[in-house]
Length: 405
Image (tube, rainbow, N blue to C red; front, side):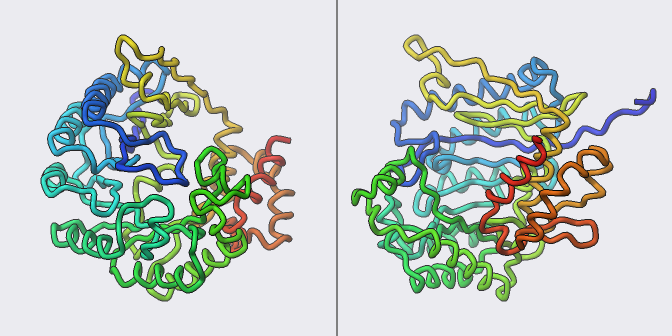
C-alpha cells in the first residue's frame, strides 16, 4: 500500500443473539430454549461484557473492527422477550463501542404476541426500525402443530400495531411443509401475507433437522409431533415455486433464494452475509467474520449457555476456534454466497479479485450446471435458474468438488 493512503474500513454489521423462547418449536435445533428471568438477566450481563471487549477480541485475532456500524440485528430465539431496561443496557454498550450510521438498519426478530408495549416503546427510542415476525403460517392448526403460540388474528393485529407505531420495515417468515399443510392452506398463507401489506417476505422450505424433535420423528417415520402429517419434499418444492409465482405480480421481487421485497426494502443486514461484508456477533452461538491484512478470519461463540454465562459451577468455556480464511476459501464463498442472490455473480469481478486461474478452474462445473438447467450465464454474469434455486445445495456441492479439485 502506498504511503499516505489510509485503507477504507467498511462499516460492520452487528448481530446480537438472544436465545430465549416462551416455548421451543418442534422443528427447531437452534441454541435457544425457555429459561427463567434470572438466566436472562445473567445473560445480558455477559452480553454487555462481551460487547465492551469487542476490540480487544478483534485485535487478538489480528482482525480489523470498524468503529462504525450500519446494521444491528437482534436474532434468536425470541429477542422481544427481553425487558425494556435490558435492551437499554445493551444499546448503551453498543453505542460506546460503535458509532451508528445515520440510516442504520436496526432489526428485531419477534414472535407475534410476544412484544410488550414498554419494550416496543424503548426499542423505538433506541432507533429500531425493522421487525421480522416469525409467522410461519396463517393457519392456526399448522402453527399449533409445531408449537407456535400465536393465532392468525394475533399476526394480523401485530402487523397493524407496529405499523401504527411507526415501524415501516416489516418482514414475515413463512414455512412451506409444516404438518397438515395443503396446497390450499399454503395459498391462503401466501395471500394473507400479501394482503398484510408488509414490504418484505421470507419463504423457507421445511428442512428435516435430525437433531430436532420433529426431525427425529420424521426420520424414524413415527407419529409424535405430528410427523406423519409433514408434506412430501416434492410438495414443498412445488409450494415454494408457487410462492415465487404469486409474489412477483404483487410487486415482491425475489432477491435471494428465500427472500422477497418491494424495491428498496431488502434486508441490508442479511445482504452483508451474502456479499461477504464484515459482521460481528455477540451472544450464544454468535458468529463473526472480520477482515485482516491477508483476507479474513471467522470465529464463533460457544452454543452452551452455562459455558457462555460463566460462574463458579459453569463448564469451562471452550476458547473460540479462529478460522483463517484463505484466498481459495474466499473465492468459494464469493461464488456460493453470491449465487444465493438473484443478481448472481459477475465473473469479471471474480477474475479481478481472485485471478483468472481460479475462475477457469470452476468453469467446467459451471458449464455442466448450465447444461443441466441449474444456472444461466449471460453477459459474464452467473445466476441460478428457478430450478437451480430449489436444488441450490446440489449446485453448490457440484461447484465445491470442482473448486476443491
